[in-house]
Image (cartoon, rainbow over all chains, first blue to last red; front, side, top):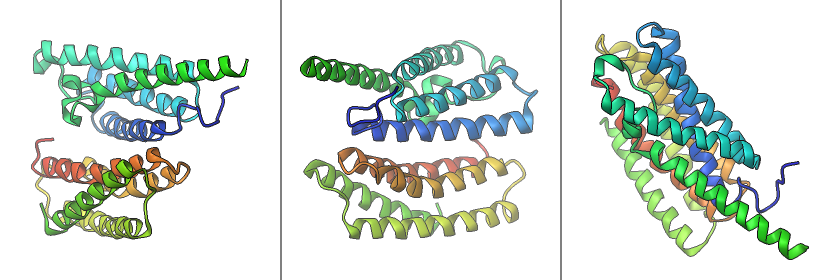
Length: 141
Length: 120
């Protein structure tokens, strides 16, 4: 049963983190919906990756907000792999092979590189909250 | 940038500075600041309406209309959602959420200008 008390991943600084994840969930969902409904066949690979990014951000936001740490760890981990992979792909491939942008293109340069920084902050926060909980458990034992 | 965007950007930056001071001093937002953010939000709703009219009457063919409207809506949504989300957290974290909202608004204006120029 997830703990929704004061030590949860959605409390304190976690409020800010969840909000930023929510903004990216909104941005990635909007971008993906627009791409898939208006021009799906133009660039299947970027558009699929946009949709994947949207789902990851939505689930990560939900997991962090409701203190589901394992789910948060998995989604933030996928996010980190995603932004690094897509970032490398977009800088290695020619523009004609990667025809349109995703949130993760060029390591998130279109969003002030926040998509690159965000998973590291997310992992740090989860690690810190995990340690805090371990200390609390030890003290109450 | 249109004059309304310049005015709103100025108000957002004033709010941002104010919020930084509050975070440093570990205070919760006062009524004056919340009123200022309400004024910004009214301005953003006007901005949304004007923007939708503008995109359908003045835009060049290569402007991505729906992307533009998406950004207009996003710009108007962040502050109310942020205020609701921060209200459950009367700490620096809650104040930090408000800081993110007022910093997002000028960023959205930049993106709107990019889309308007046709090179988003």
